[in-house]
Image (cartoon, rainbow, N blue to C red):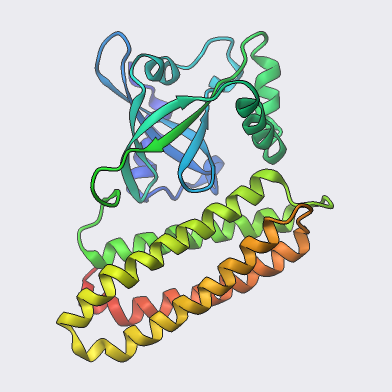
Length: 280
């Protein structure tokens, strides 16, 4: 039966492209649509997720510490494919239940970032809470974006990066250890991969498309390409800092601040110049 609490979260998530308020403000959530193991009907559930380097995301079948696995997990055991909505992108994914040391390392990362996961494990008694990797299934192109125009799609992707940078800045500021937390390190590396992929796509597809149809934009596109290079240098510097064996939180925070300042200026200029021709 539909869960009214979950449905309210789903409605807000879709209406605001993943931006949540109240208790879930700033949370990393996805909507996971699985196929019922017994009924064969689709079921959508909001679940917390962890970044895992860009190639996949992780979801944890905590069920709030229940001794019973959640329905969505049992559905994935029966049919290990699902639809993932990130708020901006929608894509099909293949589910892989992590086992052994890989599962334990992933769960330890989650606990380090949020001790609430350990509280759920203790509450669950003898049930070992599963960790599931969701691998995007390539379908001949980028994931679907729920936008009415290329301009709206650009703005949604930009806002996604803005939100993630804001979360990472908050996380680096909250760190009080001598080393960067393992999950925070992964969050930074995943952001770096996402920015690289986004700017590569713009440079190889969007910018040539605009250059051919709007020659007057040539100086704008040249400036944006130069800024891509500058941001790539900052991304590489952040990647170098967080990949160190004993990554310093203060140094990582400084690099995140530098990247944020440069990226905010870049995104604002790109929107000012390109949204009028892209719509939205």
